[in-house]
Length: 303
Image (cartoon, rainbow, N blue to C red; front, side, top):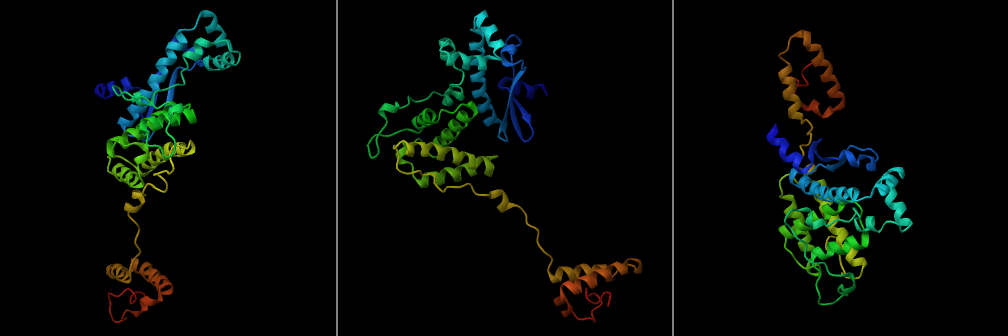
């Protein structure tokens, strides 16, 4: 058990139901600033352990910065934050009063999605002021598209940002690191088909990948950078339902075979056979076509 617990504890992920959750203890000296919570807990969803580790790394990055910000508070700031109901409440009040430049600089909401994977660096994003115009020969990379999405949407959840980064990295791995304006519907379909082949990929998770990629291109269209969304109408196939076994009804031959087997039962059980047979004859009169002279016929039983 210790061999399994080590990596889980290191990455702050814990099995939970059909997926994982993020669990990280809050240092005791900082708990009063977190409304006396003892741990940060976040359900990561029904994802694989690899995906859970990626999402947990993003949260750990955020909480690491948060710990640094909390411990950078002066004694007066700390006391004021506790009295205000916690660090978040105090920070918002201080921002409104323009009294906390240090906390603004240490804003724990910001997050670099592409650095959620250790050792991976983000390509420099295209500044918004220098973004390409529609029809321009300039290109916008997928990673720059993520930067644009973050700037326009300003998502607060580190989990959401990490998931978008994961979807883009998978597109790059499975389809290629193409400029955004060169990605076509055929590439989007290829992305979906490749995702279907990944071990453990469920239709629900696949649909989330497509939805998040669609959102990236939708922002680029809204900003006038792209003229089409290649993910439009590209949906996840319901493979689970298609492959699920379906209940098949009995044919006339099946029913006759069942009653033929019952014909050898004792008289004690015979009344049950006759009653069932009468019900079937009323509901399915076409079965009367069976010859009554056949002692193994279902229709001969109980006449």
